[in-house]
Amino acid sequence: MFMLPPVAASWFGSMLAGHFSLVTGLLHMTAIFAAVYTAHVKDGYVDFYFRGEDDDHPITERGCKLLLAAAGALFAACLAGLWLTVGIGAVLITLPTWFIGYLHAPQLDTNPVTTTTGYPLGIALSILGGYYVQTGTLSPVALAFAFVFLVLLSGVKVIDDAQDYEYDRSISKRTVAVVLGRNRARTAAYGLILFALLCVLGFSVARVFPPSSALAVLAFGVVAGIAYRSGPELATMLLIRGSYVFLALLLTAVWFRPLS
Image (cartoon, rainbow, N blue to C red; front, side, top):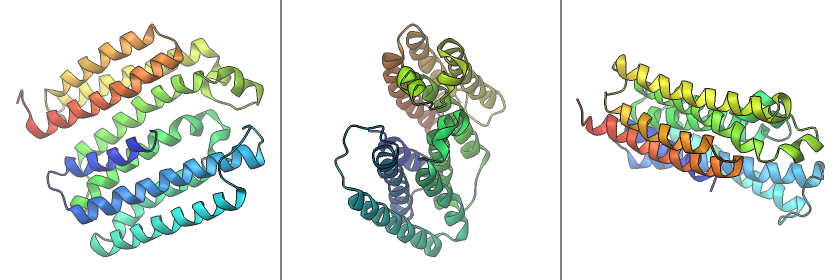
């Protein structure tokens, strides 16, 4: 399930461009899939074979290495395709997603900042990359979308990590909840979410986003209000599903501009 949002973010970035080349769009989405799959395999490999955190693992150590090599080869092939069809800029904006995935464990998941922002940053880069491979450039609206989702999803990630507070604390994993404590982490998380929603309104006033973007803020605000009164598990489920609605409403606002 966690592999779908980055791929969807790539597609979303392509849709923002206003026109869609199937070849470059598929190349970028496949590259993003390979980067996220790399993170998935590497995380399980490190947690079981090096940290001993998991009780079992469905893939042998050799199998993990082969899958990592295959995912890396697929990613490299996609980069080559993007270089040929779009240019070096497409490679430079896509390549960091693989480093985020490969270095997530054991490097980036050891401090609260990179533990929290790694996945959201991957989403943001997926949006920017999806847009770039269609246009060969970046625009204020693409940058604004990437920033909003980086901040919003960082808040959601803090709440998600709070589900594992006791376990993470027992293994000295420094998530925001472990470092700040549950209550302050919760406050910080909803502060980030609120800031992201206010940014959407600000971008609407600045005419980067159309006025109808406020409907997305209203919809997600209702979801966030319900999540705020819920436990971490239910709150995470609500916020993740709410973010899909938020994304869809923002895309509708930009494409159709119903209130413009």
